[in-house]
Image (cartoon, rainbow, N blue to C red; front, side, top):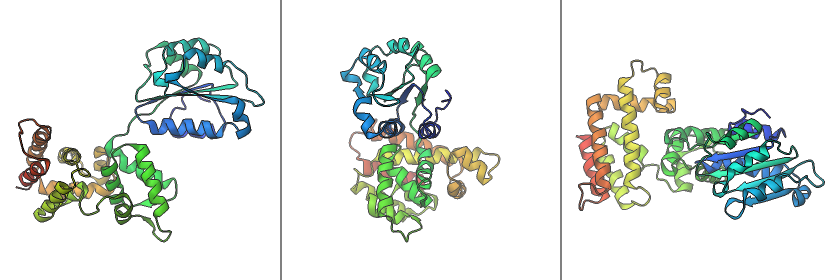
Length: 338
């Protein structure tokens, strides 16, 4: 396997072609890709009969690097390969000792480390040896504004379409936890009627528990359209459902939107494709920024961003003794609209 095969898709494709490296070190803050790769190796490299004597699972907390290396030096029994997977590898001590095994790794051993919620320091010698002899894969968290596209791409691989608004609703509600998002998408796939051409906001509302009418996506639209009545209805809904609609989430969504709007104001060329690329959004939503730019000038947008920072601090108790989240949000929305 080529040493630069380090993207998730390329790595998985190589495994499916049975092009193996002697070592895989999977690390990073996003566990989804680490689990997907290690699960594929655990489930598909060996047959069920071969697994009995040739597949070993270690856990970092309960193991030593010496025990892992000794196992890696063994030859397979009745199979062309043996598979060794070290889960929770971030808890394994003295990982630098692995460099001695990597001087001459056994070609019949497929050694996999799953290091979650952190990374191996690439400056240390063992990291360089892993890259030379195998695969050092980093699984980073994706940014919030990348989630709708990730949802669309995930479903596209399964030949399923999703409405842009539905993808935004899911992104807003689920955040950037890819494992959680994938689980919810699988629910939607199962519940989607065969006659429905795509996943709709109504289907999301019915099966995931997100209101298609009262969410941050609709709040932004109401603010843009200067719809005072609808803005207040949404805020009242949030106040009575604070657990599902925390003020921190609303402030984050509003801050991201108005920060993007400020960028939009500054763009010399407002061609749809250029705007979508600059803001990191689906081109479908460019029209929302076009409309918002007419409603909120550059100066007003800067003022709103300042307000958002102020109310974020207040929501965390700074210069705020008694005002509750609902009251703060109502006051903020009034100031944005007037």
